[in-house]
Each structure stands twice: as structure tokens, then as C-alpha cells.
Length: 268
Image 1 (tube, rainbow, N blue to C red):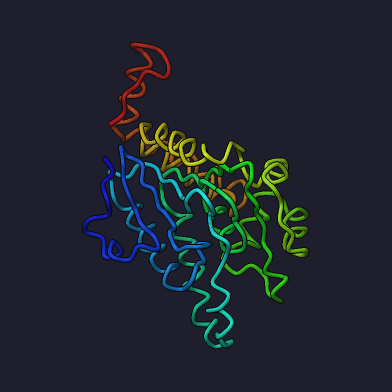
Image 2 (cartoon, one colour; image 1 turned 135 degrees about the horizontal axis):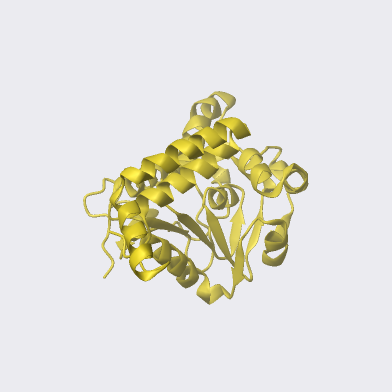
């Protein structure tokens, strides 16, 4: 049985929802027809990402836009009316919404059906793992509007696929299909369109049964380590590794390994 957000102040607004089932929280974009990410949707996304981060019963997260489209980008009609001063004020909130998703201290998988363009692609980049439909199309077409990606695309895309490939996509604004996205590392798995959510849910469900503090530490070590030099990254890893010896999950995992062999532990 799916449990809705309940007490959440964002529950009444249905353009973004959070539902929790057996440890997996699904953050669902639902703003037909293309899930355009207007300012209100960005703010709700931030709030629900922070809620998912803070709720202990949420142990892994799926980002999903439904079976037709992930998100086709920002709301251009809204942006067209904005001045330079308006965007100076808004751009931090825009980035903060996506950063809130990226900083969920739990495994996050993006389930990408249809278009993931502009802000939609940038949102998928905030996940730890991306599963795409065979008919998915991804890209950063902002240059065609006389703009550049503004929700993390210039930074997260280049870190994921390398600067040359990122510049190709950003400079040209071209879309890539699922197979090309897979070949350059933009997505991690390509599956039939009607299996995208189910496979993302299965991936998240598997990790939801894992050791929560170790998964949190692993994500922090990788993500923070990429933003610093090797020596600092190793120091961070060392600290996180040692800290896990204070957790019940470490005790459960090691006790189970000694008694029953690897992969048999049942974590809390």
C-alpha cells in the first residue's frame, strides 16, 4: 500500500508528490503535458527532496515523471517574462532545488521515460543512477534559446561524461537517444519503456534493504571526494570508514558474515 506524504505542506499541490512504499520514496513530477519545471514546481521539488532526506522510513528514492515524459525542461513561458534582476533573484532558488535532490543522503535513481531535456536532464543528473526507456531523449538545448544550462548542467554533466562530450551537448543543444546516452555514460541502463519505473523501483528497493549509514557514507565519500583533491578525499574516506564502526549495521554485517558467509545480513 502506498503511503502519501500525509503531513507534508506540499501534499495539497499535486505537480510534485512523494509516496513511500517499503522503504522507497517516489518523487513524482506530475505537471502535464510535459512536466515543465516552473518556479512553483521547483520549490515543491526542493521541499519534497528535503522531506525524503529527513524521513527515516525513506531509505532510497526514485525520481519519475510518469510513463510518457520525465521533464521537458523549464517553463519557457514563465522565463520569457523574467528580467535580468528577476533571474538574479531566482537562479539561486533554481539551483538550490536541484542541489536538494543531489544531496539526498540516500541512493537515488532517475526513471527516465520520454524527454529529459534542459532542466529535466539536469534533474536526472542529480540522481546516483539513471535508467532510461528505449525511446528516451536527453539533452541540454538551452543554447538554442540563447542561454546556457542554469540548474547544474554545465557542472554535473561535465563531471559525469567528461568536458568534451558535455561541451558537444551544451554547444549544439542536440538531443541524444537512449543508446547514445548509454554509450557516453549519461544513462546507466536502457530498458523497454513499460519497464522503466519497475526496474528503477527494484534497484531502489534492493538498496533500501541495505545498511543505511554505510550507503549514506559511501555516497558522501564519492560525491564530496569528486569536488576535492585526492589527499583530502582519502582523508574524508578514512573518517567515514572509521565512523561506521560505531553503527549497529556494521556489527550486524560482520556478525552475519562470520556466521553465515557474505550477503546474508538483514539490516535494520
